Image (cartoon, rainbow, N blue to C red):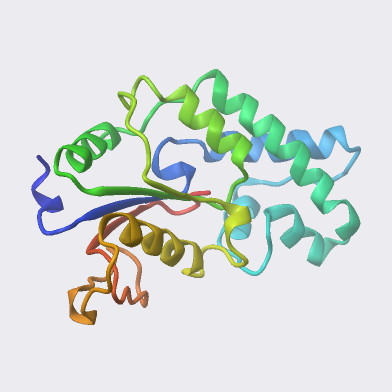
Length: 206
């Protein structure tokens, strides 16, 4: 058992990138989508990173289009990107080092396991399918994706929604407010009446 999990009752992975190193695949999928749609856009790594840190938009193309135009094409670009990204994830993706150990310790310790992502279902299903054997069939108790909430990371809405579902599943009664703990790395996020939780998220995770 991982010692740093002692005292916590839930682990939540934030973004596909917390499970696998897939940011470069995501970027490549976006640039491929632009070419398919005849766009002259091409994102560098720096542009991609800056977009992933923004907020207020459902997806990266919408954020970029708000500044560079083509807003009416943003959703179509995203739909094409989702398909390409899912295909890339299904071909050759591996769990990050240590993820399997965390999953094992979470399940063996009777803890709740959650996953939050700004992606749609298609890429998430592709990654989970490609890593099913490596995860030893371990599944998530609660999954919150783009369509489940109205605002996305870095806003805490999706994380709080996931915690509420986990709390309802594992402790279906109100907890005293002093039982909550702040998720690791989630500055300013106060989890009241929820499970003590470990939040695992990497920069640029989707």
